[in-house]
Structures are given as structure tokens and as C-alpha cells.
Image (tube, rainbow, N blue to C red):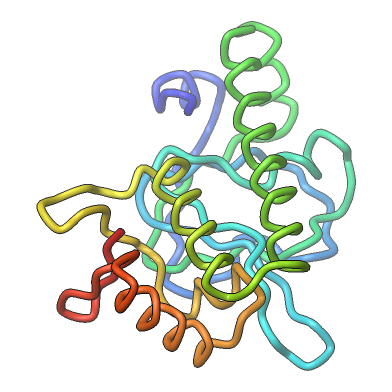
Length: 198
């Protein structure tokens, strides 16, 4: 989103996080802007039964955790590295100065936040009213657009694990597995070497 050169010019440092390492915890106040250089990050929290709910998954060049940063509110979820990850970390004051000096980047940030808000609105309606097959397809189709899943001769490779699909749609992993098999029978998805394609 923001070029590495511009981030570093404003004082961003590149930090490494191991797989499963916590980047920030739910309930703390934000003090930095985060943008992924390499790797993958999930934001999630747990319900009273200990079940994880993934709020979002973020990839290379994507930022995460900005709404609480702008609002000066506590983080509503934990940010965790899904794999070994490198992240640009920019102090809030430097980030705000960068935005003031670069209005086009401010517009990009607004568009990005609007996209996430739109996704959450769509998925909230899906989770509360729709059947599993509809939920899974909606998530996958959103992922194709928003996460730029790669396309090859088999179609779009869906870069979510079954567990992640469950955590993003409010479904149990067993339900996701069954749903994906049903969608394959209907010709909506393909399963090739355990990988899902649309």
C-alpha cells in the first residue's frame, strides 16, 4: 500500500515475527502503523468457549490494525503471525505526518478501510442468515477480489485453510470440509491435491 521507501523515509523499522508470534494483543492501545513486507497475519479473538473467530487475514503489502489507531481505542483483537513474517512498524505520529504530506496515500487508506468495512457488513449478513454453502462461496469470491488469489489452469487457488474458512464464516471445520465437498459435486469448486480452486 505505502511504498517501503516512503515508510523508511518516515522512520519505519522492519521487524521480524516468528510463526504464531503475537504482534499485538487485544485490549491494548495502539501506538504504531503496521504494514506487511513478507508473510501473513491474522487478527482474531476467542469466544467464551475458547473458539477462535478470525476478524481478518492480511498478506504482503497490506496494513492491519488502523481503525483503533485512528480512533485511539483499544485493539478489539489479537494480531498473530500465521507464518514467519516481516512487518514495517511506523510510530503513530510519523504515520499521521506521512498522511498529511501525501494526500493520495490518505485516499488509499480510506479506500482500504472502506473495503474492509464493506466485507464485514456483507459477511455479518451472511453469517446470520445464510446456509454454509452460501457463506463459503461468498467468502471465497470476496477473497478472489480482495486478496488477489492466484489463477492458473485449474482456476483461482483459494489460499485459506479449512480452519481459516471456518473461523472466518462462523462454521465448524467439519462443516467446512463437508460443504467444500458438496460444492465440488455441484461444480462450484475443484479439489486438486487437497487444494481448493474456484
